[in-house]
Length: 112
Length: 117
Image (cartoon, rainbow over all chains, first blue to last red):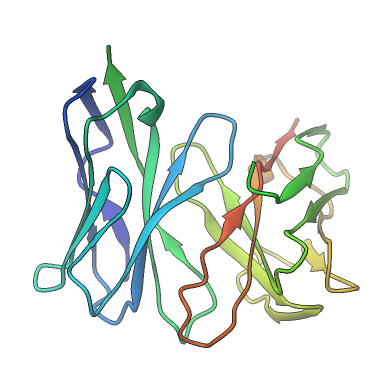
């Protein structure tokens, strides 16, 4: 069935290093993809999104890469900081649908 | 703080009781979504409103779940005859959809954590 999932449930990086969080999806009809960050006790916070007709988009310290050939999405965080420690979710949506489908999440831990 | 608020933040109830949660979206947002999130999982879509109209409710988990948005502003989610399996975080999100193909960024509230004993 259709699914959005992440390759690794946990990721630990050293402060100052770059982080890469991966996501695989199965629905080739997805129109856009979104990355959310969720800190403990809070709701998901939007980070960045990318439409399916793009392969890269950059924000402040974050870059999202989309490879539609292998149905793979990644979030790159530059110079990871302790405040980046959280669970990261990828989500996908189609314009014709009403819902947004989330993966299970990757917990990022930044070591000082 | 995204501007979306939810009340209460925590609710503990006994099995069989009814509970109601409230969501106040960002004021100019025309769409409001409800999600459920269980531990270690991503949010799971339940229902959504376009202004006061509930346009999708087939994903509500059972007929014990209902939602309203009577004036197109705040919304309530009610669970009747709660079961232990209803224990989860219930999240509300809002967005402004200006076109069918807009990437409607959803802003989430802090959630209501429900524990059913």
